[in-house]
Length: 243
Image (cartoon, rainbow, N blue to C red; front, side, top):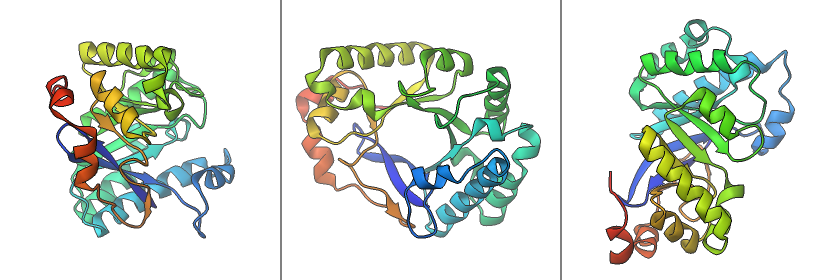
């Protein structure tokens, strides 16, 4: 696993680390997912969870741990979560620090079933997120059907939004919607200070991307304080609601 931080720019804190699967020789996630078949999907999903939790505990992670999961690989929540619960208990990782991201690598075949999975996970104290919103299968219809705790906006929407009125308006309306229904918005793929400042002005304080840190293999990268200082100033802070 490689880990990349998700940060709250307004508070200058790391909110979570996302566990990103890598191949045996460091191959990227896309290469790994090319090896996943309907026959090995369940085993792959379960193995990734266990490795992520064990790695997080070994690295003494104190924040939330965000784990991607394949919704079509989860058949019965109570059964599929056993290995997760057992591993967390064995390594002493608190359940309320686990966050599960529904990936857009595959189409959700049964939205009602995934909604039940989300509700079941809440019962265990987990947080759920819809990953890559605005790209692939992660549509507004899926957001309305699943109603997760967090929406992660895809980098395709975020890229250059400081220079694109349509993109900035879309993110602004999503932030307003999320505030009204009690959902947290995380902007993915933030690479420039200008993008970060634009997001702050739109009310989005949670971000992830190369601007803050690149994924680190079997390590927890930190975020230099000067990055936060560069993104923030009195004018920006005044317009942002700090959690």
